[in-house]
Image 1 (tube, helix red, strand yellow):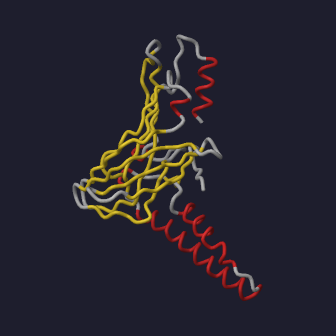
Image 2 (image 1 turned 30 degrees about the vertical axis):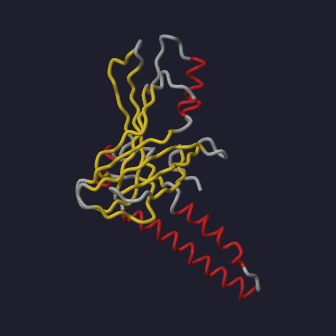
Image 3 (image 1 turned 180 degrees about the horizontal axis):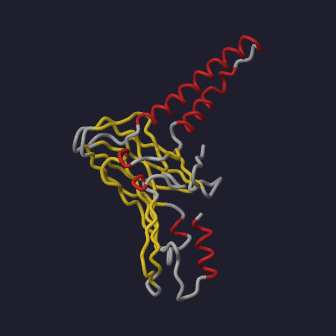
Length: 233
């Protein structure tokens, strides 16, 4: 949605004017929320069980073999249940370690080209205690600080992070297919990038690599939406 805001800024903002909000920051963190993650995995397995019943009934009652599209069905269900983000209301205790700043924007000066996505950015999360990592989450803050020429008299920050409780935006959560059991001082690292989808410019693919200490990379692609409570498939 930021494209529309920047186009309005470029058309109407006067030289001495200021943007409100003036700055935006994107955050990314490891999380633990096994009840929710396992619920998603149960939904995925349930969809496969329903498919098996459907195949058997089609053979029995109509003599039609639907197995020829089984691979496509399984891929579709995997993308939806496992590799799509989920709008969630997290709490502070779900967050593991220190959240990572992914990118910052000065909304007074940034260009439309700069907000098209996020280039591959390294991240590293230190796990301070023994815990099971269920996946990752992203959220943002915006500052109402005015501009260099026209600063606000009182700076205000709006956060959509888990620490502030419920907000309209919530957080986007990316659950791992297999949770990671961590010992104290485990390091989870890798790279992440956000790439706009061709079919819907308000949706992004999150390209994420995950490495536990010195282990091998596990690369996954997940889809998320810039709209609240919306998930791409």
